[in-house]
Image (cartoon, rainbow, N blue to C red; front, side):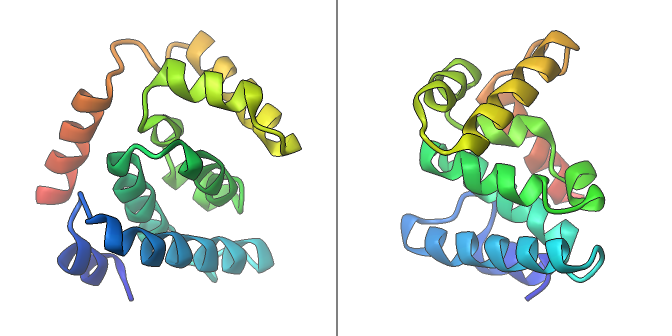
Length: 137
């Protein structure tokens, strides 16, 4: 599956029944990217992250983080804001209490980006509209 097929099949706001398929696609391509940069489809990974962002499930934060950190290209493709589909403050609170060590790394990175101004004017709704415009072209 490529980005166009995923967009046709699931749209930007997939139903709950499709979220597990999107998560699996993201995990598969992140694993390919970790094995060798360029083996995974980072554009498809970005779309999967947008789809999960729009679902707003905090349980997806670390899945998105793992995908973002899988390669240099993936890190560039997956915007930090995509970690925050449930909201910035909610995501920070979630990462503060999550057990895996990568949660603290994600929280540190998120706070660093917030301090650098990457979240000025951020809202889930406005970011979702931005991605809708991006994918409608």
